[in-house]
Length: 188
Image (cartoon, rainbow, N blue to C red; front, side, top):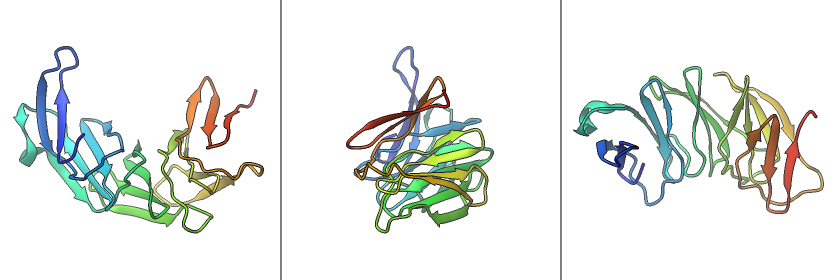
């Protein structure tokens, strides 16, 4: 994904297979998310989203766009789960859920506990939960369903630094990094 153009390449040869229109922005940080042959793209400071059918040869711009929406995030990537896209709008600090088939907004709700906070991380999906890490408000856990429901907010009391990184998981251990510390959380 680059400004104005989404391109697909053959991983063995590097040959460009197809390309189509994409979000046009000076910077695009979010990674694409794909499910069942549909590629979901979000990005730009103005907040934009698109769904594109994968495949074809050459320029497939007009035939492959499924939907466009004026919702998105400039930093964090979307997560697909059971017919919905979930992400945090980085500048407004809102959790967003879109219908993956239509791009319609299912919900857009404040995620953060501190005013003027932002959320640069990509949500982590685990089981039936979405974990978001705003920059200053701790970790917020939402139900992974198309109704906004905060299950928990977790704050590390002695770390008031900013968190810019997304959560990572390996062998049942959850890793979190703030600007001061790195953490590992486990049931073990």
